[in-house]
Length: 286
Image (tube, rainbow, N blue to C red):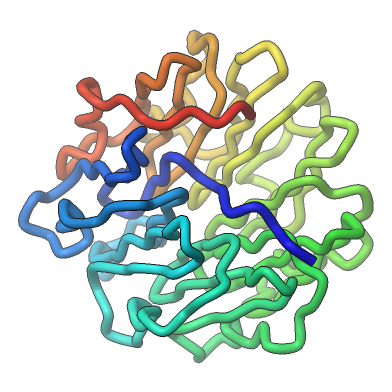
């Protein structure tokens, strides 16, 4: 099985944002002195990921991951548990990043993981027939080609209870919840219902989803953006957005890409994470 190498053109982390430029270089917004933002020498990138974790007094440092067109992976930033040790990865088709963790889906449909092992979120060696992976704070999720899902790691809120899902087209993972987009454009959720309820059950014609720490966002076929969950920093103030083709939800902010490659932001701008007005990113249709 061969999977096309493509993925997120934007990513939102705990305190930074990442964008994929049309020329394959990578843009970052956040603390310029932070290691996760020092990616100016990267090239040939086709997808990006940002390590995310809920906002708390003992969180903040993060890492950035890039997938190259040749199937290799680069990572930069916080590496206290080896989450950036990906230099030997090859044949990678997709990437995801969580708190102290990096995931990959390989061309053969298997998965790899490096980083924090305490909660079991890196125990993905037995997964097969995958087309995508997602990383939450302490759990990991895989999407199989058959449209089913698998999850490992912390299950304190039921965020890993996804075995009954069917006809899944995309997945996303937040702090304590997991979100899926079905082939019919509906949204499923497991775990912390406050991060998506009560609105998502009525969402229709959805073409993309993203899970922040405690909020969830979705793009409709008309390019509108829907949001539910925690809005304490304005991260769900996206109802006025139009012509959006990609989204990313971080700890307390949300990013959206318009069809022209410009980037919209909502929510917390601490550390300059929403300083993206000059960005032009690669556009993949949602």
